[in-house]
Length: 102
Image 1 (spheres, helix red, strand yellow):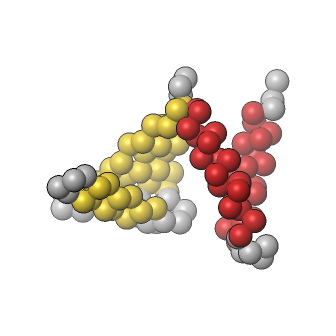
Image 2: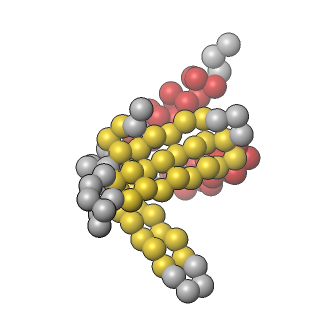
C-alpha cells in the first residue's frame, strides 16, 4: 500500500541526448519495501496523462549501505534544531531497532 509523500522528492535522469526531471510533492504517493536483494522504492504522481508519472528504483543492499554511510558522514552539517534532523534520527532509530529484532 502506498503512502502520501510527506515532503518532496525531485528525480532527474540525464542521458546523452535527453534530460528528464520530475517532482513528487504532497499530492504524490510512495512505497518503499525491502525485497530479497535490496530496497524497492516507487514514487507516483497521480492525475491526468499530461501530469501523471512514476519512478521505480531498486538499490541492492550493498549500495544502500554505502549510501547510508555517505549520509552519515554529512549528517553533522544539519543544524541541531532542524526538524529534518529529528525526522532522520527517528527513522534511523526505527530501522536500527527493526534490524536488531530477533
